[in-house]
Length: 315
Image (cartoon, rainbow, N blue to C red; front, side, top):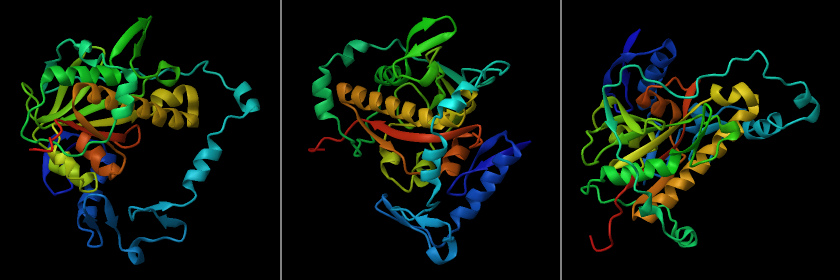
């Protein structure tokens, strides 16, 4: 069916094909947007009316949101490897999922220039020493497409090939690469505003939706204002089945580890290029999933990061 994705501020993103699950998510976003108990202060601390939403099996975490207090412990215990269980496992007869995310009819294609990796040749120890999360951006200074090209290559660029396996700059368990990169581009020279998917093999950007949704994304990220100032926001999703095919429930561990590898590459590349970046782990998952257009089950948001030109102290 077709539906209009409803964003956190009530706007509609445009007609797209959607599953009933996605339609449900859009409806839940409308409901969540009306929660009178929600308060956001400074982009870092939030509160939900505990009397309305606290359940006996839940706890309020530091940001004020409710989670089952045993879920982390259960995850750690239930994804442990057991020697006897591993002996019984086999991939025989299991069909491996597609290794890449394919979009049949993107609204446009932007071929990225070859990355000038000479720009990254700075002493590693110096970059590690200077690495910081930088949240203040010069919002009026566009990012060059050449710098974006280098940053994308540093995070998930192809470095080698062996048969059907394409090795990348960040490691992945079993070389399965379940993490996909989407970009919300606000201000990059030569690229229109919109939501893009990064095709690492073709080294190109696929336009999925036109428009500047940085304010919607900022609201979904607990009102962190830096999202509205950054030139680009990276959105990393996990195509879970790509790893579960081989690693079953332990795949979730590997997926989050891979996201961390990718994000650290982003930090070091931005430091080498004189750019700023800040990783974001606090967001309303369903809101971000709806903005991207994924179902939150087979493919779901796992991590975000802002990238842009850091504002100088004298500015």
